[in-house]
Length: 282
Image (cartoon, rainbow, N blue to C red; front, side):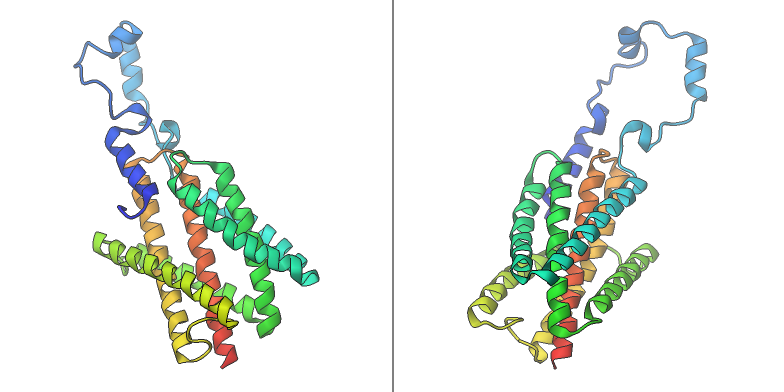
């Protein structure tokens, strides 16, 4: 949690109390509420006791259903704009390259803004999904043309199967997200992110499609490592969602949690594309 500014904020808010509950004065019976609202009759007290406890929806807290719905919304946007990006790229390669580069740079900038913004901005998260979809559509069309049909569909199936497998492994306890596990994976992600930037620059300068390692054994090993790292990152996402629900995070955090899950899924899909393309080039 400490490595993620978003969930740092969840922990901070949970300590101070969501929805203003945490800072309520401890005044004792007969003070506070009776002074604010007047005398409370025995019948009214009995009616309050008989009512069911307020659930997450009543108290404005994030629920698992919220996260699922928001994830499906963002996933639908990525799919729709991805299809548009594919069609446009197929008809106009120059425009497809703009979608590729523009989507990559745009999502990088928006991602940083979303992560460090003090308030959660739903329009920014939706805009990110649009740019991400255009990027995915353009990239997918390039890989389909360059490495043959069937590669994209295989990457999609592999991504969904990995997602399902990681979810079952997490829920069954086969994979347990401890603080040490989170620190190791987070450091590995930061390290790989730096490597990816350097590798991208090297690929552009040397005019090689995959950068370091190419399509040889080293390149395949790099792709396998990236796929494994992205897969384990899904476990962090699942655990972050569980922690947010347990800690009573505000309902708007469902957008942020869904955003994080979609980002990891797209990353995993791209790494599968690169791995399969390398294997086909051997």
